[in-house]
Image (cartoon, rainbow, N blue to C red; front, side, top):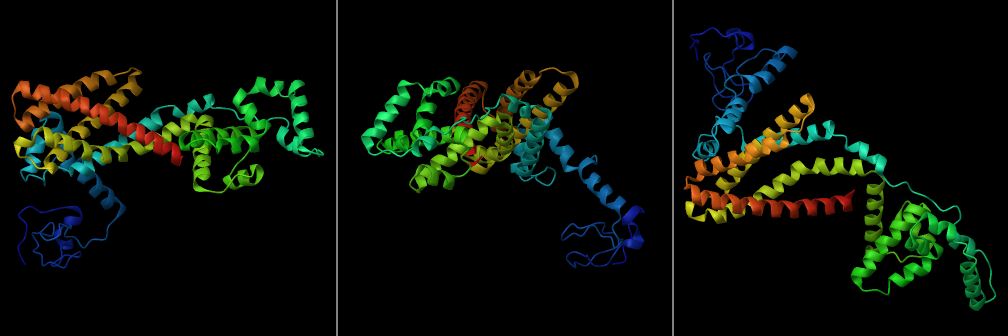
Length: 374
């Protein structure tokens, strides 16, 4: 317990601040212990100052021998080899692949959101126009002696082309819906499931745009619509579509914010196919997943650099960096799986084709889910 370090430390690691027991876990310590061998907490009893706090934070990330710099150097200069070292047990030298990829993806999509002008797309949004007169409401106020007289009045209205003004302001379908929305909705219910649901979406889309219907219960009362899940789902989807039409830029930003987390659902699924292609190499599924994480991390690093270059020099460098990544990915496959050039090239093109197909499906699902939840 009395051992003294050969080199005199400074700052909060001075000998006068050394303890004989870890303040975190209670493990016995020597004076030479800069960190607890049991839990790795710093052996210091000094009160944490603001300077100490930021010094420790910056040292963890920007010191010469930090995990961050070692990981970045290995990723850039040793494609594929960092994964071999990591899965072979050399893990303390590098950052956790999952955490590293998550951090990079969040940084990249934040940069995209702030540097891009997606919000400016809102100027192309749909401007909701409400009819000057609610024809159905006004017509329903008129009292007729019988249904025959009512139908005759409808025919006369049409012959006088009262709706011609509105038909110039909106589509024929919209004007048809707005003239008699209650009857139109009843007709929709006679269709099969697919046509009925799409028809209801179209109906709600129209009345939300032109009749200022703000919530589902309001539509139930006004148009005598049955209250059920199908109608509610159709209304919610139509409401989302109207919001997207009004603010397309805001929707794009919302979509981009979900992409980092989508990556972590997609890569584990895609890694199954990598495992199937390299099934004879005796790697575990987790090994392939870590390989995917490392390569995706490098892609985000290149895209971040590309975006910064674009902002500074006002150029488009994405194509160059995508080409660099394509070459890098081939080298990573060669170094990690250690197969010949011909086999690697064949698997390279097969897996990349599969990646784009599955990626397109994933993006489609993401957009559809975002529309439903927007």
